[in-house]
Image (cartoon, rainbow, N blue to C red; front, side, top):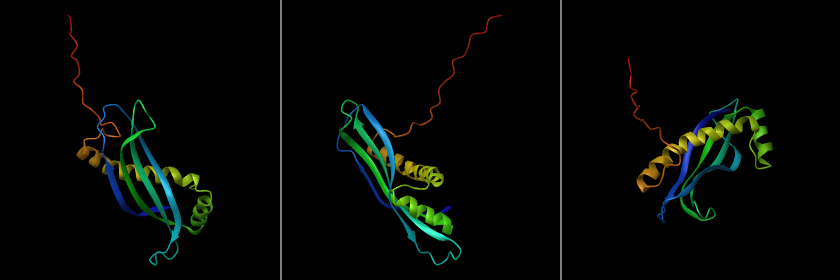
Length: 145
Protein backbone atom coordinates (compact mmCIF):
# COMPACT_ATOMS: atom_id res chain seq x y z
CA UNK A 1 0.00 0.00 0.00
CA UNK A 2 1.22 3.46 -0.87
CA UNK A 3 -0.41 6.87 -0.37
CA UNK A 4 -0.48 8.52 -3.81
CA UNK A 5 -2.88 11.37 -3.05
CA UNK A 6 -3.87 13.62 -0.16
CA UNK A 7 -6.72 16.08 -0.67
CA UNK A 8 -8.20 18.57 1.76
CA UNK A 9 -11.89 19.25 1.17
CA UNK A 10 -12.91 21.49 4.06
CA UNK A 11 -11.09 23.36 6.81
CA UNK A 12 -12.91 25.12 9.63
CA UNK A 13 -11.88 26.64 12.92
CA UNK A 14 -14.21 28.15 15.51
CA UNK A 15 -13.40 30.29 18.49
CA UNK A 16 -16.74 31.66 19.67
CA UNK A 17 -15.81 31.56 23.35
CA UNK A 18 -12.94 32.77 25.45
CA UNK A 19 -11.97 30.55 28.35
CA UNK A 20 -8.84 29.80 30.32
CA UNK A 21 -8.78 26.11 31.26
CA UNK A 22 -9.56 23.53 28.63
CA UNK A 23 -9.31 19.86 27.85
CA UNK A 24 -8.00 19.35 24.34
CA UNK A 25 -8.59 16.16 22.39
CA UNK A 26 -7.59 15.16 18.87
CA UNK A 27 -9.56 12.62 16.86
CA UNK A 28 -9.28 11.08 13.40
CA UNK A 29 -12.24 9.20 11.95
CA UNK A 30 -12.73 7.58 8.58
CA UNK A 31 -16.09 8.36 6.97
CA UNK A 32 -15.97 6.30 3.80
CA UNK A 33 -13.74 3.79 2.05
CA UNK A 34 -14.41 3.00 -1.63
CA UNK A 35 -12.67 1.63 -4.67
CA UNK A 36 -11.52 4.35 -7.00
CA UNK A 37 -10.53 4.15 -10.65
CA UNK A 38 -7.22 5.48 -11.89
CA UNK A 39 -6.38 4.41 -15.45
CA UNK A 40 -2.64 5.02 -15.03
CA UNK A 41 -2.30 2.08 -12.66
CA UNK A 42 -2.63 -1.16 -14.61
CA UNK A 43 -1.50 -3.83 -12.16
CA UNK A 44 -2.75 -2.13 -8.99
CA UNK A 45 -6.03 -0.74 -7.74
CA UNK A 46 -6.85 2.45 -5.87
CA UNK A 47 -8.83 3.02 -2.70
CA UNK A 48 -10.23 6.39 -1.67
CA UNK A 49 -10.50 6.84 2.10
CA UNK A 50 -12.38 9.93 3.34
CA UNK A 51 -11.47 11.22 6.80
CA UNK A 52 -12.23 13.85 9.41
CA UNK A 53 -9.52 15.29 11.68
CA UNK A 54 -10.85 17.23 14.67
CA UNK A 55 -9.29 19.10 17.57
CA UNK A 56 -11.90 19.74 20.29
CA UNK A 57 -11.52 22.24 23.10
CA UNK A 58 -13.84 21.46 25.99
CA UNK A 59 -14.27 23.36 29.23
CA UNK A 60 -12.13 21.79 31.98
CA UNK A 61 -15.00 22.08 34.47
CA UNK A 62 -17.79 20.92 32.15
CA UNK A 63 -16.27 18.29 29.85
CA UNK A 64 -19.47 17.87 27.83
CA UNK A 65 -19.47 21.49 26.68
CA UNK A 66 -17.58 22.01 23.41
CA UNK A 67 -16.05 25.47 23.39
CA UNK A 68 -13.80 25.69 20.34
CA UNK A 69 -12.78 23.37 17.54
CA UNK A 70 -10.61 22.90 14.47
CA UNK A 71 -11.92 20.49 11.83
CA UNK A 72 -10.28 19.29 8.63
CA UNK A 73 -11.96 16.89 6.21
CA UNK A 74 -10.29 15.28 3.25
CA UNK A 75 -9.39 12.07 1.52
CA UNK A 76 -6.45 9.80 0.86
CA UNK A 77 -5.89 7.99 -2.41
CA UNK A 78 -4.13 4.68 -1.85
CA UNK A 79 -2.41 2.46 -4.40
CA UNK A 80 -3.06 -1.13 -3.33
CA UNK A 81 -2.79 -4.64 -4.72
CA UNK A 82 -5.96 -6.51 -5.65
CA UNK A 83 -5.73 -8.53 -2.44
CA UNK A 84 -5.30 -5.37 -0.34
CA UNK A 85 -8.27 -3.80 -2.12
CA UNK A 86 -10.46 -6.77 -1.17
CA UNK A 87 -9.14 -6.54 2.38
CA UNK A 88 -10.09 -2.83 2.62
CA UNK A 89 -13.59 -3.37 1.23
CA UNK A 90 -14.21 -6.38 3.49
CA UNK A 91 -13.02 -4.52 6.61
CA UNK A 92 -15.06 -1.42 5.71
CA UNK A 93 -18.29 -3.45 5.72
CA UNK A 94 -17.83 -3.33 9.53
CA UNK A 95 -16.72 0.35 9.36
CA UNK A 96 -13.13 -0.62 10.12
CA UNK A 97 -9.79 -0.53 8.33
CA UNK A 98 -7.42 -3.48 7.96
CA UNK A 99 -5.45 -3.78 11.21
CA UNK A 100 -2.04 -3.83 9.53
CA UNK A 101 -2.77 -0.63 7.53
CA UNK A 102 -4.62 1.42 10.15
CA UNK A 103 -1.68 2.73 12.18
CA UNK A 104 0.20 4.04 9.14
CA UNK A 105 -2.88 5.83 7.79
CA UNK A 106 -3.68 7.47 11.13
CA UNK A 107 -0.08 8.66 11.53
CA UNK A 108 -0.03 10.05 7.98
CA UNK A 109 -3.21 12.07 8.59
CA UNK A 110 -2.02 13.27 12.00
CA UNK A 111 1.27 14.45 10.50
CA UNK A 112 -0.38 16.33 7.63
CA UNK A 113 -3.34 17.82 9.51
CA UNK A 114 -1.58 18.73 12.77
CA UNK A 115 0.62 21.24 10.95
CA UNK A 116 -2.42 22.93 9.40
CA UNK A 117 -4.30 22.86 12.71
CA UNK A 118 -1.35 24.50 14.50
CA UNK A 119 -1.42 27.35 11.96
CA UNK A 120 -5.13 27.91 12.57
CA UNK A 121 -4.71 27.71 16.34
CA UNK A 122 -1.97 30.35 16.17
CA UNK A 123 -4.10 32.68 14.04
CA UNK A 124 -7.14 32.33 16.32
CA UNK A 125 -5.19 32.49 19.56
CA UNK A 126 -6.16 28.96 20.59
CA UNK A 127 -3.94 26.83 22.78
CA UNK A 128 -1.85 24.45 20.60
CA UNK A 129 -3.15 20.88 20.63
CA UNK A 130 0.40 19.51 20.85
CA UNK A 131 3.13 20.89 23.09
CA UNK A 132 6.06 22.72 21.53
CA UNK A 133 9.57 21.86 22.62
CA UNK A 134 11.03 24.52 24.89
CA UNK A 135 14.59 25.49 25.63
CA UNK A 136 15.39 26.01 29.30
CA UNK A 137 18.46 27.59 30.81
CA UNK A 138 20.69 25.22 32.73
CA UNK A 139 21.66 26.16 36.23
CA UNK A 140 25.38 26.40 36.64
CA UNK A 141 26.73 24.43 39.55
CA UNK A 142 29.21 25.98 41.99
CA UNK A 143 32.59 24.27 41.93
CA UNK A 144 34.53 24.18 45.18
CA UNK A 145 38.22 23.36 45.44
